Length: 283
Image (cartoon, rainbow, N blue to C red; front, top):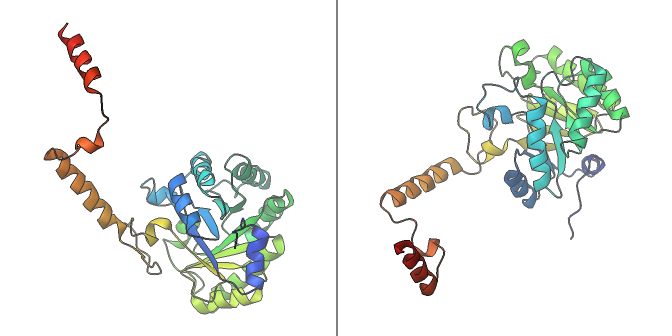
């Protein structure tokens, strides 16, 4: 069967058909191409790139220009996956008009097909305006990394009855505002399941249990490439960091021992041209 381009409406339709949604992050052309070839439904160019690509302690310093740079690279590498650009800290919180302009930049300059932003009912005005401008919006509730100063760190959310009820209310508000999907991060599984059952749009879980309509993980976590932070909800499907270090070490040893490059790694030159070259040097 010929693979079709994934869109926001098709993701919503997958929930209606009870088909799980797959999502991964990617940050460059090569990564996006690999994720796309694997048949993943959606690619999030996450502001997590600040940590896994730039070595920052958190996502807060990531800028619009940095996000757009990575978005453009991802857009060149993915043909079928739906592309979601993560709006960075303070690109949408201050003013609704600024939020719409920045969301538009993700589509016009970054090659994205929708945007993701964090927050609940306090973000409804911005979401409505962005959607009214013709830009699909994915919400993000639970542990919202851009709010770590308020939370006091990377802490699970919705663990009390009051907080869980607020999550449900926030999800309903985001759906009413026009979001086509919502990421639920670091939320107790029963709470995430309750949210998923009460809204018609898909929930994409990360550390939120199997009751969500889909799942997302960070590219580097799945491949075992980033060990500075290791959330308990991550499942490593490979330990490529070890393989990569072994390959680099083998390369270093070959160079030091003059085993690389060998003759097969060089470009040939005819004997006649070599002789002429040597004669020119002697002359």
